[in-house]
Image (cartoon, rainbow, N blue to C red; front, side):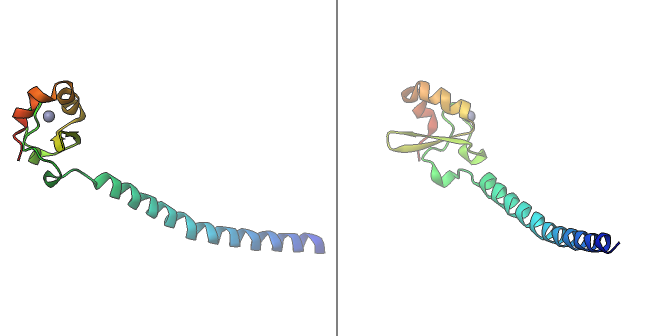
Length: 102
Ligand SMILES: [Zn+2]
């Protein structure tokens, strides 16, 4: 009987210690991961970063939002979407006039 009591005491102490450490660590790691994801998601191109006023492919003003950029002749061009950037790179010379460079 003595052996059984000793074993149950060790088991209950071990479980309590284990549960305590888990509760402290889990929320902390979750919070730091969420903060990192938010900071990368909010990084966006701004009008100040590009040299054109309008998306040369669709004619949309860059103030409406830039989701991709392309470098052309030492200029940075902003595009509303990667698709518009792809269209521009196919024939940049013809599209450049529509970009209305600053
Ligand atoms: Zn566009």
